[in-house]
Image 1 (cartoon, rainbow, N blue to C red):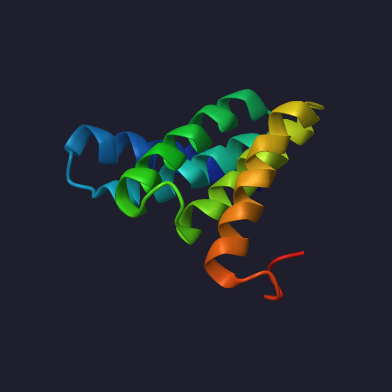
Image 2: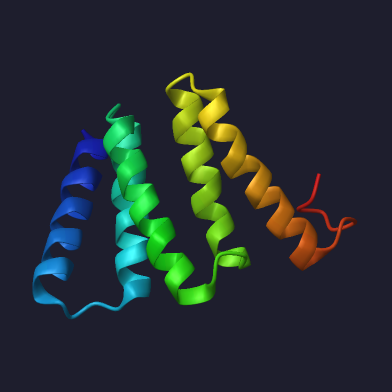
Length: 113
């Protein structure tokens, strides 16, 4: 029930933001990611993936394809693909996120396995 409420709220916020055109790309990226997470929790992982992809596109436009800010979205995308038993689809997202963290933080950083 709680996940359904969260999904409904996230969907309403995203729809309102898109219609009003008053939100920044950053806000739309966050709302898309939040709605994707809610849908994944409800078992609608395929729709969640589409929203994660939209969030990734927006975040890349804002901060670049190789910024640390895209890594959490890549992790969400990978997890969603794994939830659908698609490790081959998850792997590029995992590898890209790891490459970004390694480059930006250094190989010895605690967030780099």
